Image 1 (tube, rainbow, N blue to C red):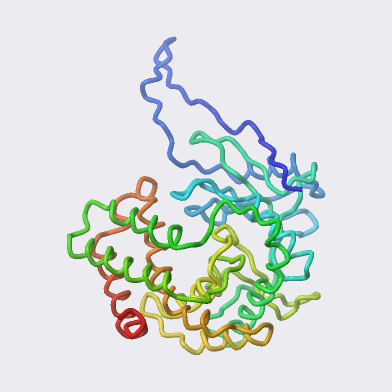
Image 2 (cartoon, one colour; image 1 turned 180 degrees about the horizontal axis):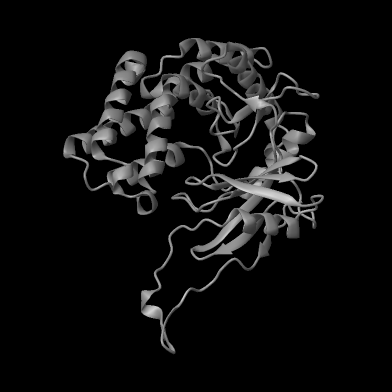
Length: 358
């Protein structure tokens, strides 16, 4: 089901002509290109068994290129073209296999749509190189509003708990390329942040010292559970189903940051979404945990460690930003902004973590 199939094409060489002489010196290497919606529609029509004509539109670009497709009968799909990141290529084989498994277990997810040959993912050639691509079912329903709706927060907690419950049956076949450990979540992102040229020495030292304290505490914590993580369950990578067997449930999507990792981190991503960037949505966090606990027991060690992983999540995110300045530009990650985020993390440490870090 997960055999990789490479689709050639989509790469054109652009040349300038001056009279009858080809002038190649004006051709510039490409870091990141985005295909046209029409080209994506043709690509999907050629390689997927979807009925009738297809319309396509670009939803957004940046982390990945995301397109919405609609058939003549009104069926909706999402086509994601992944980008290479600092950690390496997207782990589409493990991601799509896990989604297929969750779908078979009745967990509400937007699973991958098989190609004509049964493959769950493919790839295409771009000027910057080969990139993986996946066609997903559309989650349907309405967007989750988990920070502003107690019911939606509960629904997200329920689906994450069901996912973690099911994950134990997938562990034996999990061949994930990435593990959400401290190297992945903390040390590599920290290296990307420290590579920023405009950071002053006090911010650099503050980040290094904080990361060392956080890493040390994680290493000392006993009994932290390990599971297959969603990796980005902040409450908005879900739709609330309005009809069908999953009506009222949170349907999860966007699993490309997932992999085997700390259960506490998967919880912490939701908490981080409630408290970062000046937010104070504590009621949503409690509702989320309430929903989680209706499905499965939550060990005290994992619940208490969620607070520890909030600044780790913050460092991971800004490390991701820093790793993309060659695409987004130096001003996308200004040094004074990173300094502000360090202030948030230090304040969080003092208020929530200080007893555990002494």
